[in-house]
Structure formats: structure tokens, C-alpha cells
Amino acid sequence: LSAGSAGEIRPAARKALMNLHTRVSLLRFNADTQLLLMASQAKQEAFRVVHVGKGGVFANWPTAGTPLHHVHTADISPSSSALAIGNDRGKVLLYRLKHYS
Image 1 (tube, rainbow, N blue to C red):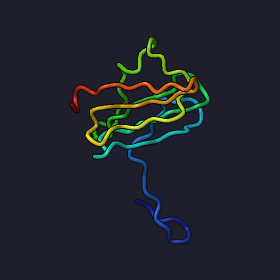
Image 2: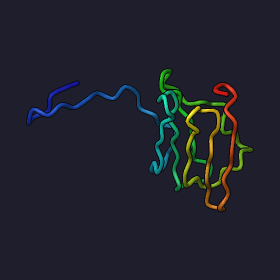
Image 3: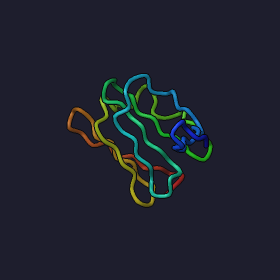
Image 4: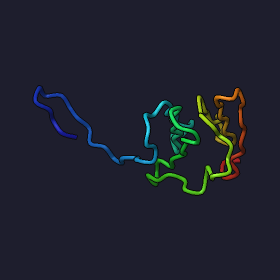
């Protein structure tokens, strides 16, 4: 933390995630804040899952073959066992997160 000119507190960033190259349109944490979903509607396939504790993005998913298209919304189930992603084609893609099942 640092103090600004008017005495306001400015927290220092813990990590900068530079994995999306367009404006971020979605940020969503799971129930225990271990995972962070981030997406951009501006570019196809612009969706990443971040492990907050490790501060890194899952590099193995989504792959080039994952048919996400333009992601409009996403959420994780309360138990973190399922991930739902809604896209511009009116589809909702449902994925099981085996680690959390």
C-alpha cells in the first residue's frame, strides 16, 4: 500500500495479467476465490481461467480447438465443479472441472 497526494490509500497490484489483448468485458471469481474467469467480447476465443493462489493462467485450456467464439458471459457452479460459458451464437457451453468434482 502507498499513500496518495490527498492521503488516499493506493494498494499495490499483486499481479498483472496480460493474457488478453483487448478490453476485458468479464471478470468473475468462483465461490472460494481460487479461480478467476476473464474474457473479452472484442475477440474470438478471448477467455482465460486464472488460478489466483498461484497467480498464473491455465495454459492448457482453452485450446485452439475449443469452440468458444465471442464469450458474452461465464460462471462457475457454487462447488466449482462446473463451468458455463455463453457465447455470441446463443450457445451455453458446459464444462466439468474434474479437479473440483
